Length: 321
Image 1 (cartoon, rainbow, N blue to C red):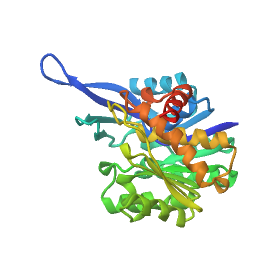
Image 2: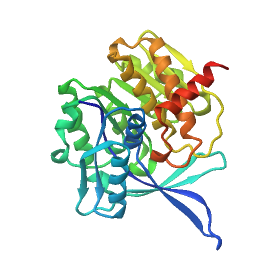
Image 3: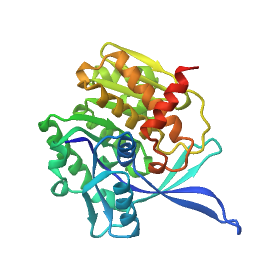
Image 4: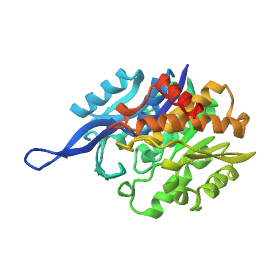
């Protein structure tokens, strides 16, 4: 039995790290992709995980497969595209660690996952099936995602969804809104960022967005708000869960670290989404905030995911303040 199987993109983040002696920009090869990042965090917390997706038959694809394996993530469902290069994302960082993206994905291998190559047995043998919205932005991976969701729903998996908006991957903003919102009815638990609140719910205020998700039938909703922590909402209420100031080197993967930590704590509770109380949600979000606070102090996404003992040490420090 797997704790979490995730479907979606795994790619290379080429992250700006400064200039060469001749003045040219230098980019570091970092493994990333939101669903893979979440699994890496969960795996480092001791959970059994599996990834479903596609890479190219190239050096980057080989590298990404090895990274998943090194992180204890099952790769039986990782396929190789015949005619597409591994997807690349060039990431520029501002002085405060905030990111901007430029993708090499026309098409990228992550878009080539088909319904026929989705490893159904991994989904059926999982407690949680997790997906994001990048796989909804192109075919055939969109059809593969909905095929996987149907399998997960029929198998009784807890379904979790983390929509990430990358404008350049959609034909226009309206298409992104329609595409990302269309998957909401499948989800039991949803995480969005404050920047995506209006896109996903039509509500610009994080509190209104979280409550809107719950009113739509989502059992547990979380909204990440950077240095302001997170909001968590369940049918019996909503709460703000603060974090603490941390040194920011790179915010890449911070939301994924939060969600990985959140899902770890949820799994540890042994509860179903319908049984999660507001106090439970606050506890899960505190674990997620601690995970994210560690992630932002490091470069990259998968390499920056913290281990369980590191997260617990941060929580212990917070408890003594």
